[in-house]
Structure formats: structure tokens, C-alpha cells
Amino acid sequence: MSKRTRDVMRPGRPDEAELIGGVPVRAEATVDEALCTMIEAGTDHLAVIDGHEIIGSVTPGELAISIEDTRTWSSLCR
Image 1 (tube, helix red, strand yellow):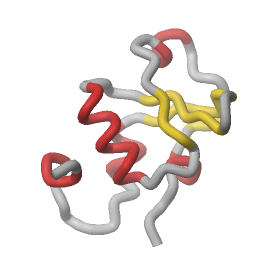
Image 2 (image 1 turned 135 degrees about the vertical axis):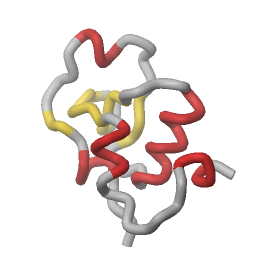
Image 3 (image 1 turned 45 degrees about the horizontal axis):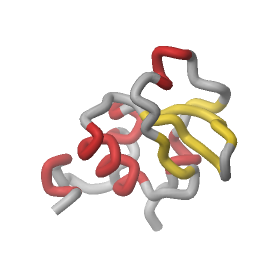
């Protein structure tokens, strides 16, 4: 079963620097979905939302360490 963004995020409200760009990802999104969102948006962090509430943030490193196979990031969104 694929991990969810909620499983790898840093809980708590992101600081202002992490909110610049305003790219959110749902807490229930898979790690693959979050990585695709990050790649497509060209950002190095995402605000994690549950409904309309920001509940945390996630970075590429936090997502990357949770990938269970050897796919490259560039192959995820194809």
C-alpha cells in the first residue's frame, strides 16, 4: 500500500517561507501524487491540507525517503 502524504509530513503550521507559492497537497494524497504535484509546480515544499486547514508541510527529502522502489522522480508523472 502506498504511503500517504499525511504519513511523511511535518505536522504543524508551515512557516511563511514554506507557504510562498501556495501549492497545497491533500493529506490523503499518495506520496507519488505529492511528488508529481511538487515536480509540476516546480517547488521544493508543499503545504499539506486537510479540507481547508493547513496541517503541515512536506519537502522532497521527506517524500523521497518514503518511496519503496527505485523509480526516478522524472518517471513518476508520465
